[in-house]
Length: 631
Image (cartoon, rainbow, N blue to C red; front, side):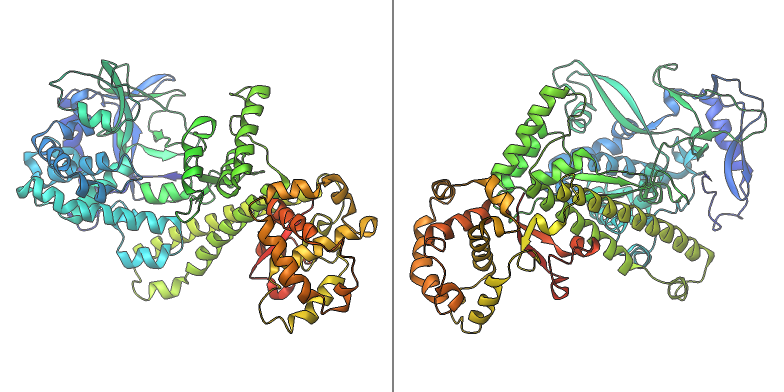
């Protein structure tokens, strides 16, 4: 499916294309050195596009613009307006940072470019760029330009709702800064939103080399916005966004081949058709593989179906996490520094990516587990070659189950939010029954359904990976590997006795951890009669080893067991008849050390989705399930 640029809005002097304006653009471009004689801008099916007047041979040029016709960030920065705004932002770093946010290093440059574009549009015919700017639509159809109530109604619960809201906030915060820098600019929010929408929907990235010297006005800005650009290199390569008049009217179509050549014309740009274009045919551009979230937020359209659709999830480190700084340092330094905490799931994914699994392991593991993950990355890199798969890592079954459970919970929450945010067409059209309202709903609905489909595929992949970890390439049941208080394979005698004691447990001695420790002690005592005997034999952990793991707590645990728990348990005939050797303080310490090293908290949603009801009861369906991984 192809997407085309919008024509002027109906508020202009009629809905048809104003030929004078288009002819004026083409005349202006030719007068300033643009080679566009073989291009015709015309309307087909109500939308504007570019066609070839004469055939274009394979490998031949579609059109060419010299540097003076390229409207770029540096164009704005070198203007008197751009210098004034840049100086003001430099002088007010706190306000500038509050506007852009600390996570988007490019936001300032984008706002400055948008401000210059809005300023030039305000100047009208006095601007050199007027013949180009006057042909751009008044509304690009981006959620940024939708009424705020439409964003809330149509995008509630989606990533795009946050993105659109955050963009509006950033531009609103920029207005007073622009007004203070250039008091007579008279730029308002609608001006800036229009300019920002024009940039994100039409701009192209373009590299250029900046010769560094003390007099270069652009040095500070360009190097600041290009991390690692080489401060000590006199020829610093940077990438900036550029608008290409006339050439940016070529519409997008998937699987089309086109080349952008910035070397053929020094400082300029040349579009080349590798396969050629017959006379009279539409010339197509290709924005690359993009999901509907990108297309709707930055271009104002969606594709249905969209084979390149994706859904984004962010794995955040909680500021209340005791290992917050440790996890952040792991992901910022060393072999794991390239691992991203922002992940894209794609519609055609057949497995969870190594990078996602590694990132999640680092974010949910204990400190020893994270160290083991990082060491496994080193070992794999050494054995397989760093460039083969630098994202791969290994982890224990316990850590993988926690990671997968966490992922499943996060993705489930995304799906739930999108589903709950959905609305019916009728309820939206009641407020605005226009065709524009219906089109916004259609695009939002296509986007929503695509997000749900991609996320549901990710949930399926989580389940499949979870099963692989549990099965360990065998056909044994899940309950053979995870011991919970509801596990059907435990003897059940401890729980029966505990249930009786719970009625008189006034001091709350029998919490979840304590009961599970008692179950572990009893299963170990059963020896070969326990369903988990093989694990205990393989573990072969002595009391001394357990004491080392719990060295700082052994004394307190032993005292708690002997002075409080054991006397209380003795009220039950079951516990009173057990051997004090098997049910001792040392065994209690051993069981708690096992909880510490093998204990796991799983989201019940993934267990329920996989029909693992042998691990929990229906009343636990909305709660986290605590257990021990016996693998």
